[in-house]
Length: 221
Image (cartoon, rainbow, N blue to C red; front, top):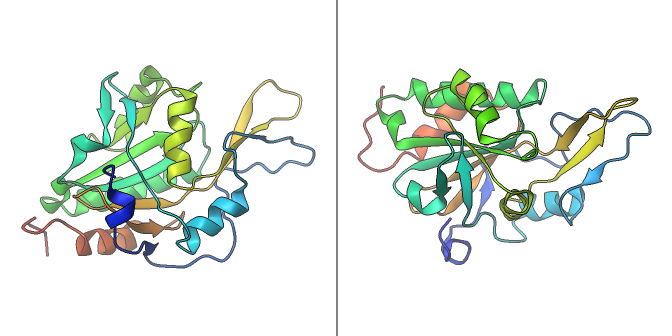
């Protein structure tokens, strides 16, 4: 995800299954719910750009981790990044995918130490560093949660063609968030590799991660 990554990255591709329809994770979809789109682009437009490799995917970021430390993409050079966009109040899809991601990385130990899972919230108003600090460790000590200002989160989400929109809950001041839930891979040089769909099981993810481990990383066979 270096500054030049989109120009030099190999052709991105779906790592596993290719989708023909927009998948929204954590969607309530209630009748009459008025979504408040955070991005400037529609779900269909972003999906089209991602699925058919019409635009570069990924880019630099500067966000705050769940310990309150500023983290940038450049810090993770040498690591195979597994990036997931979601939010802590997501009832099922996000925790299921995070569990699969961390389980796959843990299963690959000691080679798994070359893998860095990142959970980037799309709900920075509620997912503060303090809140993420209570949520992230329940999955794995290697998982890093990232948040930031709404603008900073929006920039990196759009760079990865992530659609998300607030969906108010009926008769409540609370809300859920409709969002795409892909799992993105970025190589140790910071170049985008591709994505896997929501709901990818841990064993399938483990197989894909093993194929993209940095050279020299030991693995459990």
